[in-house]
Image (tube, rainbow, N blue to C red; front, top):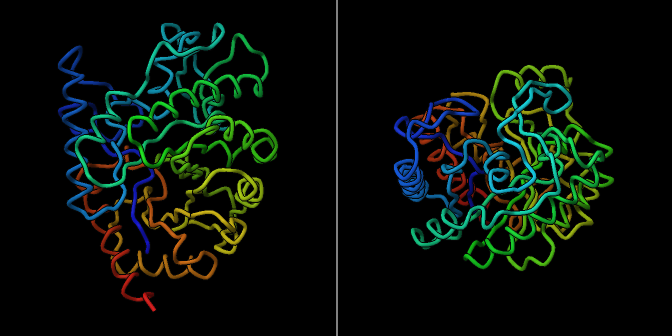
Length: 340
C-alpha cells in the first residue's frame, strides 16, 4: 500500500554538471564524463534506497535534459544549428535542435544506464522517456510540417527503445507529457493516441507523467495565471482512463488541482504528487500523509502511489535528499493511518 517513487529527474552532483539548472553544462568530457554519469547514477540509487523508496529511478543523471537526452541518438535531428523557440505555448524560450530529415534511431539510446540501474538495485526500477507530444513541442520542425505526423514518427522510435528497455529488465516505463497540460484539446484528440503508439506491445507497467512543469521561474509565474482551480486534467483524464496506459502521475500538493478530478482515472494506478518541486521547504511526514489521505477520497488504497509533483533536477542536492526522505516517511505514516 502506497508505494513510493520519484517522477524522474534528480539534481546533478556538482562534480558532474552545473547545479540548479534545467539545462546544465557538463563539467567533464569523453570517457571521464561517461564514467561520472554512472557514478552519479549509483549515488542516487543509494540515496533513494536509503530514503526508503520502493521504485528506483536513475535520476536521469546521464541526460542533460529529459527531452534532449533521447534526441541525441535520433538521426534526422540537427543539434549543430539550434534555434530559439517558445516552449509550452511560449511560456519560456529555449535553444532547441531542428528536425531536418526522416527520423530514425542511431542505435540504442539508454541501454547503458538502464542496465546499470538494473544491476545495482534489487528493487523495482522505473525508466523515463519523453512523450511524443512533448518532444514535438521541444524541437523545431523543418521537415514533417505536421505536428501529428511528427508525433507519431517520434512515437515509433520511443516504442523501439521502450521495448528494448523492457528487455533490459525495466519494471515501469514512464512517458513524460507536460505538454498534455498545455495543448488540452490536442492531447485528448491525438496526444493520447501517440502515447499509446509509444507504449505499443509493452508487457511491463506503463505510465504517463503530466505535471505543471519543473520548479523554475517561468512555470511558477505561469501557475499564478491559472486561477483558483486548475482543471487542465479534466480534458485528458477521460482519454487516459480509456487508454492502455497503466499509471498516471499528476501534481497535487500545493497546487490548485481539484482532487475530485482523480475520480476520472477509474481503473488506473494514480501517482499522486505529494512532494512540491517548486519550493525548498521540506514537507513533513504529516503533510505527505495528509495529502495521501485527501487523494484516498477518490483513489483506492491499492491504486495509490506516492510520488513527487515533477522532477527535482533544478533543486539543490541537499533539498532533494531531504524531500526523498519526507516522501518515504510520509507514505509510512499514511500506511499506519489508513491500514484498516
